[in-house]
Length: 322
Image (cartoon, rainbow, N blue to C red; front, top):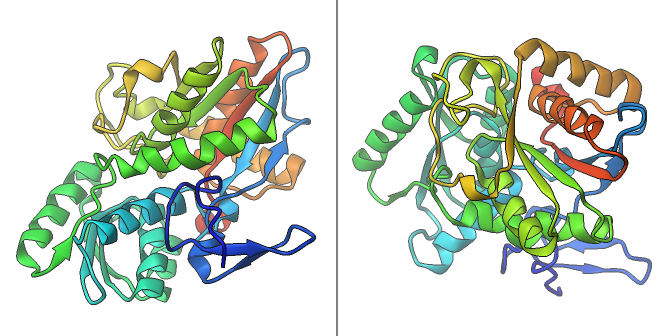
């Protein structure tokens, strides 16, 4: 198998695949399917007279979300540095999608996976995690991700040979987007990117993509998206909200404020409404974080006179149906 990871995800060894003469990808295992996601034009949702909104289809990663990229990068980095080996235990605090990605990777690589999350995370995510063989520990909803992180750190201390990826401060997280997502976007739109809009959970996506776009494009705008009820980057107090995957309630170390030009706050209602519109008007069944991203992207696009605004379609709406 040949390696194309420098272009498709930047995750290094472990993501091997080859392409047929017609361009089809043949992967060595599920990890070779991470990254290289399509970009789709959201023409019916783009504001009249403004820029065109594009969605990066991260729900098409093998474990179903954008989190496949940083999860794989963090695990491969840990393997290469000798922090983990077959039989080790991965412990992580996650709102769901990172956990699903880690559980998928653990199943391929032969690790035990213990995941800690707030009890208000969707049941669908829990079922998926168990299907991959992960063990789940729930923490009180009112403690948010801070409570989950605290519990995960306690489990780490109690578990021999355990490793915590620490997605909120692990530099491999934004690096996966610098080396992969950003370069894919630039290639797909041939450098014609006027704004990039991304929700802030761990901060990896907005930081990683934002850094590269700022280096390559002089006038590009990078916009962060936060839940209106927990807009801590905007200086507000943390609070409960319904946009799973965004708004951890604190500012992660992986957030690079220098690349962020502005912040758009999105309500739970607006995020859910846009997610429904994406399904019914664009044929894209995606989750509320994608709805928040597209809602914010449309606001940004309305301020521009033409051009392209790119945002992230984070995961599938099938995880939020019940």
